[in-house]
Length: 316
Image 1: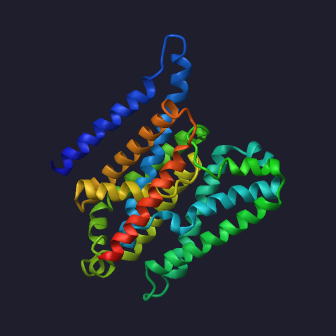
Image 2: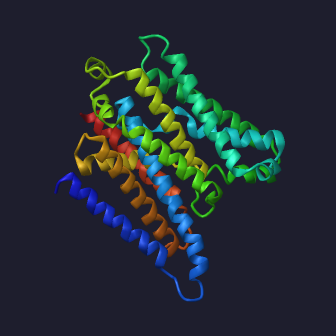
């Protein structure tokens, strides 16, 4: 089966899961209310899954490493720090008073600025490479996480509950007020990234080979970091951080499609990620009766898969 047929197959599978998610349990008494809740939720789930997959594929390409995800840049930790800082300085009512759209734009703005500053500081010299960026990202991620933990420790317990709701991924408490804004941001990044797809194919050969083939490496990495920042902030602001989903679905997609072309890798990863979240949420709601959050299962399975990849790479 060619990779185009495989994409058609997983597209049909996603459509089936979406239909099941929407129609199961509907009757003439509850269909209006149920659809008003389920349709925004399914849009948010697909938007979150596709954003995580998109950013993970691009990030693994520019780092030329299949065991990394954008979380190593510290963007998830920065988002939690921003939310904690607002509550710590202004109180929990500040998150209620300010517009959720403004909060979303603020978080996106800080994450993009942070990525640009990292790029500017580390790529001034020609001998610096993407691994210095990852190192600094991990250091700053730990720094933001430590600051967030310190502030969470000393704030009022009631205000901590407000912050805690934003620390863990939950599709049942999805921030649907920013859904259309997030859709617009996702559409912009997809349209903007489309013209870079052939160059990303070349970037997968490595930095030196890409430069020798005429690719403006620094420019593409800078632009893609901004795209990654927007996508990570979209998924995190909607439902919260999901650490290992990108690592899991991207590696499954690479093995499933067996192609280097990013127009298929990105599309396939987005579809498989959406299938994972829609199917997982369907099981969590209809079979497990909300007893276990889907993010816990994904991080558990993803963590085991991450260890498997490390052990496999160590034997090669």
